Length: 129
Image 1 (tube, rainbow, N blue to C red):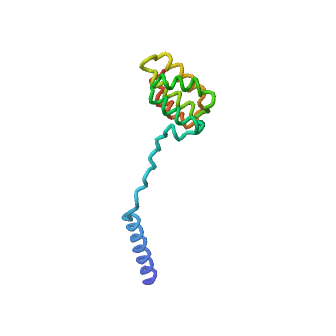
Image 2 (cartoon, helix red, strand yellow):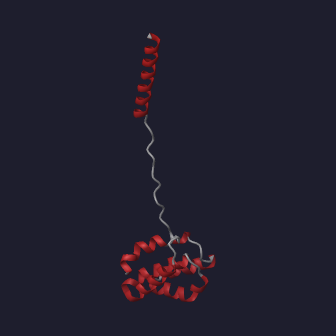
Image 3 (cartoon, helix red, strand yellow):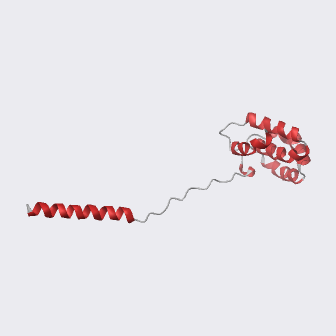
């Protein structure tokens, strides 16, 4: 009988020791991965030869982007085309809000939810509707 009591006491002490160890075990906190900010230059769809004309057009503002899109728009594919058109809509909002809303609506209509541009559309949505 004494042996049985000793076994229970040893098992009880081990169990209490294990629970105390679990409670005070210092674990590294899990670091949540910060969402990466998407940059338009990372998106596919723009031929490399058009990178320089695009940067020049962006420096010229809304007029430059309008001319760039008129001249090279057919050679650019989504998602990069959508990003450039959103840039143009943002610049046009001060000069011609109706035109900016029309461009935004066109981009939103053709952009699927799975597109990398969709978060930017959701961000700008309240401004343009």
